Picture 1 (cartoon, rainbow over the protein chains, first blue to last red):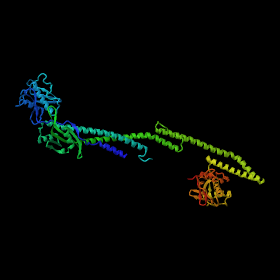
Picture 2 (picture 1 turned 60 degrees about the vertical axis):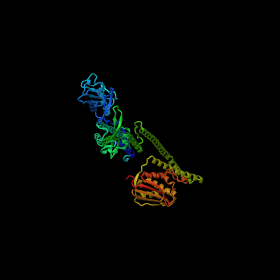
Picture 3 (picture 1 turned 180 degrees about the vertical axis):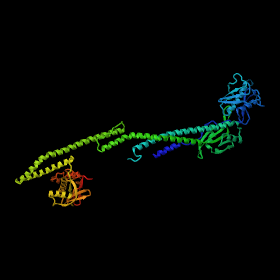
Picture 4 (picture 1 turned 180 degrees about the horizontal axis):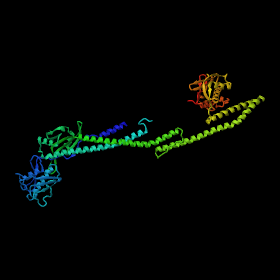
Length: 157
Length: 466
């Protein structure tokens, strides 16, 4: 009888406290570091080209878009986005939709220029750990019919 | 009464309570264990998510490849007790040194977020480790060489688990009074028929053969009750039959004795005439006549003794008590039989005795007669007062009673040897003597002394007194 009681008590106490455990997998590793920001410009053949702007870090989507709007600099690439004085882009993340409020009118950006913006934003998003299946909506200062439809980057995803 | 915890009720209650407590305890333990596990899991998940969130939120702002300052910044963002390493650089603080090699190896090998629970310095700790990876725009991932390890204290979780366990034990022990109450009820329902049965058995043992228990239900106890009832009924019918047979036998003996009395009276008268006439007969005829007379006297004695015995058996004997002097009574008996000169009487006067004079005479005459007939001289009779009793001892100087005879001397018609068969005794004398002694509330015992047999009659001085 006494032995049964002790066994029951021991069993009961085994349920107490936090037991040690082995190493368990908890999922994907965090990400977000990069030697620079990836920007998309247009090369001589009229195709999109990813270039690494050596900022020393990945930076945010806003920062990446600011760099994009600033222009390709003195490289042999060009941009299809009209130059603007105000380069701040408002970024809103809503689930898998990235909403970009760009300081441009729809007519100031060619379709290729829109791809530049979308790809740059998506690259920054993916590199900082976001989903590659996210879509981008461009909100222009002056929109065009269908200009705020969800877009994806032809080079990503 | 039964000692504590040995009675059926206590054992039932203890067993019931124990089983209930074990059940409740097991259920509570299982509940507490799974709740604890869930608690630990959710806590662990929250801590690891917080860990990755903090890294992910600061990572895009970190320069790569990182310098010492960058590592320090990352470490500060993740929180206390954190270590951040990149190639030869290391930024660590607090308990980060507790991280196990096992976890480091797993993190390096799998390139994924990993955790491990350990106990160090008496505290439960959660170790979290992860490499920081570089993701290309197309989604491919490669290690950056940065590793982050953090140590998180689970003491608070453990305290909550302990609370949980304590409350589980408390809940389980709430079942104890309930179990005891139910057990008492169950024990009562089991024990009530048992007690009734016990009472019935006691009444049966006390002689109330009509006692029965009502059998309710169809369980083992009911079966037992039925069996006991059947047993009682069978005993009762046997007893009734036996009593009837006993009564029949007694009545038969009494009837026979009674019926024989008249012809025997006649026979006795005839025998006296015959005895007188025998002197004038021829020798052969006189011999036969004397033999017939002797046998007639024996027959009369036998029938008288049988009548006496049957009266005792019928319980129809009442002693007629009167105040006597024991010595005088014994002396009267000896004188009436003409034995005074053959018996040494030691009887101090003044031993008061209240008894039936005729019956006392019968007993003493039987004892002395036996001693004279079967024992050897000297025959001694001693009368003495012993406390509230009067002793009358009859001893002889004969060979004594054989050992195998001693226990049977007071049985009816018991003959010590074949030679006694022809003695004039009826074989009922000692049985009647014992019955008379008992009638007075006394006793009669036989024993062997160094030089013969001794019969001791012990009578209370006053059978009616206390």
